[in-house]
Structure formats: C-alpha cells, structure tokens
Image (cartoon, rainbow, N blue to C red; front, side, top):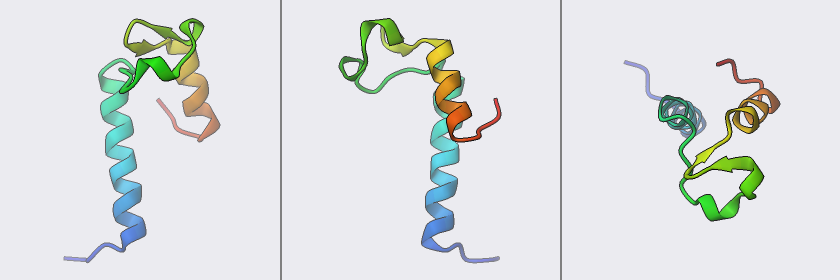
Length: 60
C-alpha cells in the first residue's frame, strides 16, 4: 500500500469535504459570513455555489 504525502492527504480531504458539502445542498458552516443575497437560510444559493465550484474547475 502506497503511503500518501501530506499534500496528497490534504487534497483528498478537500475533495471529501467538498463532495459532502455538495451532497448536503451547500450547507454553510457559518451563514453569517455571507450576504443575504448569497444564501437561503443556512445554505448557499445554488447559483453562487456553482460559480465557486467553476472557479476551482470542479465538476458537479
């Protein structure tokens, strides 16, 4: 079994966290950090979330 580098571990952790965020409909950890126009309750608006994902070249 291959041992992962610290960089690979961080990359995989980000991918897992991102997929969990998507699966939970873009739930926000701290909704107060976002403008009212960017969120719906405790979740990021889908359009805003998709723009964020596009900026990092993430496919949904």
